[in-house]
Amino acid sequence: MTDAPSIELVSFRPGPPRIYRVAGSRLVTDFIMPGLRTYVTPGKATWSAEWDMPLPDGGERVYGGQGLIADGMRLVTCHVSATGCRLTVEGIGTYWISPDGRRIAEVEINDNCETDTRAMAALGAPLILALAARGTFCLHASVVTYDGRLVAFIGESGAGKSTLARFLDTSAGPAWTRIIDDTLPLTIDGQGQAVALPHFPQLKLPDGSQPSRLVPEQMALSAVYRLVESKSIDIDPIAPGEGAVTLAGQTVASRLFGRALLVRHLDFCSKLALRFPIQQLAYPRDFESLLAVQKALAANLDELS
Image 1 (cartoon, rainbow, N blue to C red):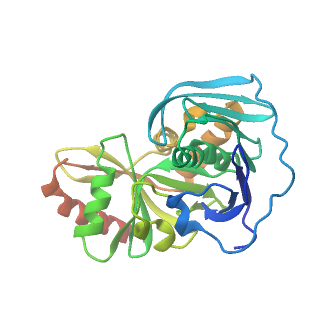
Image 2: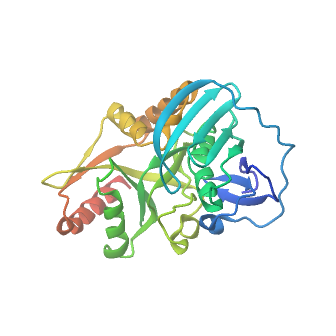
């Protein structure tokens, strides 16, 4: 896909650019990060133009508080103005994201910050904000494939997303494969269909299990299940309004969205919930129930196909 949209990510002291393929985009950056080695695209790259980064201005403060960035919890502040988004991470630096999501730059950096930490931070919230500006939003999700179909599990922290995906991958037979353990980029195509862009670095997964090794760059999303605890195993549809609220609450970095982006995000969640069935999977939170959960999921997915 040579016609993929490009995002340029440049460090405080820019070096030779490299090309990666991330979430359906051509990411041009001078960062070197072990987590991106399976996303490298061969070929030469050049910067599109001279970098002229605006000085950070005031703008609307949309967030100030703790956030999980790179290697731990850090103080994060985010301002949005006509010149773009300014994201400051305590102990690391300040990032600027252009309004159209085409450019990300370090405008300030802590010289004592480790290079790997800087790279991890840049490929987190700044990249997710750039993708959102281009209409690709990222869900907190664990994702598996079932007979080649993409299935996402969402829910509050501790709901069992990772545990269920890991069980299906290791104990439910060859039909199931875990591909995502944290972040699932999604967009809506010109026909109004939900399209997953699973080639996104999953820092919790080893190199051999990265999505870029396991599945195509784009896939139709087959099912989304919201996980909740219950005494029995039940799968029930969620009303579109409730589904939209659920998707909005499970979107990565949504606290950093300015007003305009927040409107686009809510519109995205509403369209997705209206056109795509979101279901609730309720089950006992114990290991002994997982085999029965797997059978219920398989039956439900077979009905949906």
